[in-house]
Length: 375
Image (cartoon, rainbow, N blue to C red):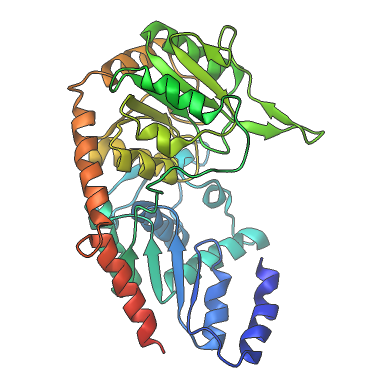
């Protein structure tokens, strides 16, 4: 997308009334230099949380290194970030782990992130009741107060997403209506992760042993011929498992599922969108982070917010079926502490976007006022 630099520059210079600011994704750091050349502010939008941005800023600016280059679990500490988190080397961004001085592509990645840090403002899809300490840190880290939390941007209504489903939505919702309150486990690992056969077998064995009702979403992928293919479903787990659960191949109305009264717990990879959708719905989570910012998000949920427990971690790790069964049974208990905390955070999340009084609503109003002043 960096090839758009010159065409956008030419368009700005030729436009009779050009925009007064640029709002762009955090992966488009080059737009900071474009904004500087045009002498207008550049504002970053982060689809990830404030903690994840704080750690990325530290990594790309300070370039922490592991003392033992052969130890993937070497601990990397972040003393400048609130709560001084520590992560094993293998849980950091794969782009950062691959960084070596002199690599042209990775130097561009670093330069883009340093440009993010130098940008005029930052908009984060989060809310102060969830990440207030990290939002405050970002203001200090970036040297100004132009940091706005406008989330959760999770949709309040069910929306159709691309892709097909092996089960019609009305049939899925009718099945959920037959389930008791907080009795169903929803399992989804986002749009990228594909489990191996062994991972799915252990997860399936754990579900069987728990005797819990479940909805398991299996990712749709494209084969070499362009046709839809799916991850291997363990023997006995068909599209309709009578009385116990559903394995759905393809798209599911995740927001609608999570907000159904029968939803008991969400087994998730901890992608930020899924995290926010779960929090808004007030559903506690079972965490299996696999990559990107998911380890960071899982730490926030498990260690700081108390709304989740971890059952496995890593894209190649194989869960223990007995652990899966135990955690599922515990998580469906009505008095599970994580359920109580999840309900509290749901109230906070909805309060943050309440018109007129919510913290995120006020931040959004503040952003609009700042942009209006630029004129």
